[in-house]
Length: 342
Image (tube, rainbow, N blue to C red; front, side, top):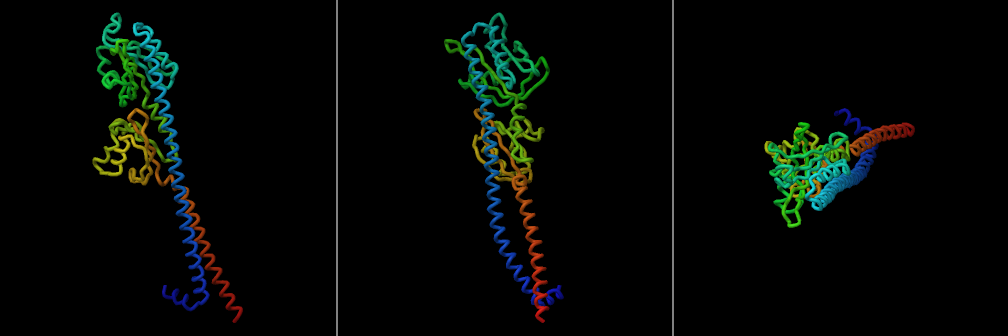
């Protein structure tokens, strides 16, 4: 090292070349730093706009589905209230609901105990998609007293139609179950007395596939939580319905994640930059209609700035190689010039 420094001090050509290259390097560094800063901000803003637009489009799509459920349920309730004394018509209405809306999971038109005396205590016209067909049966039994379920009681207690928190729908004939969310509307007679409830459900698995299909970037993913913070959509299926957004903060406190969970619970809309599973991410969140649920898109920074970082490394490599070549040629040119004069 000492020999090299002594050599540089003796050689005028080397010193001049180093000063020229150093000056050029400072100019390049200043210009490229400003360029990279502006480019990174542009990439960041483009990523924010892209993710926000996709989130809004997904929210609009989900809202349109929820609105169709509400409109179809209200129309079915209107038909039922026009002919409240015809039990057989209820099967037609329930089946027709699913025939006209193949993406609905099931439809139930349930009545108060002994409303149709000839049918016994329970009468619920229940239709459900089974593959490509629709099965319609009379529901209700001593094992399944629908009068005490949330979907039957909530619209009566609240005195207006409502969406339920997702719950497990058990299908006795096929011994299967499905996580669903239901829109419920109370039925009243001409005197204003409650006679039953119309209940239309969406499969949470189907809704999860619709939301999970949203991927602005290769490693981005979507989540959906309910009013209590429970995961209903998440790339890790072991967390769905078993954990809340706050579960992991019990052992590993994370104020940013807690703040995100509370914001989503309150039905707020926005974005946050935070660490998710140890990785820097942007999280974009938005409420989903009247369901009380909220969805979010998680985009890792490595995905957003991956192309930009690769370009920056390539440009810096080219600049470094160029400066070294510049230094080499300056030394040769100055050395050869000095030799020719002597």
